Length: 178
Picture 1 (cartoon, one colour):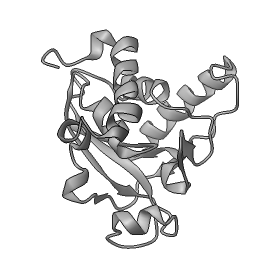
Picture 2 (tube, one colour):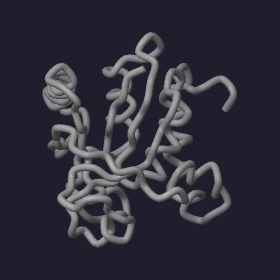
Picture 3 (cartoon, one colour):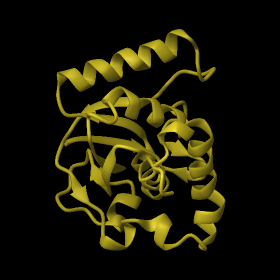
Picture 4 (cartoon, one colour):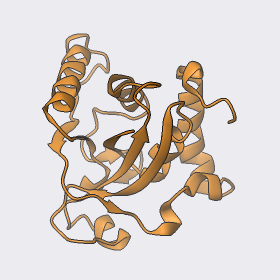
């Protein structure tokens, strides 16, 4: 099993999308890239710790590649908005790829360059490539949030459309029991 860490807005949204991906065995919401040890959700939301809300993905490389994970990453958020996804604003919502090694960094750089060359998004990509730092799991109530709170208004109006977009764009990648 391998791991990948991405930040692309609210972790409730990104966790819900990546939980549906065939070949992914676990998705954990958490915090990365900041300067405070063991940050809390309230601290991260204050924008003062430097952390991003992220997801740590555990995946089976025989079923899905790092490049395929990046394809889903790029297509399920807006990588052209600096420190913002929809109404979620702040550095904690930045678009970032936290690479574990030079190979992951190179794959991400090449992918981002190809998207830039094609002007895929019509605006410059602001996604950062950052070396992995200490990962801090989010509080338990943030884990599996969408599945546990589907009736909540945020889940209905923000998370569900992202899940539906993923299913529409990547029907071949959706876990068969979802």
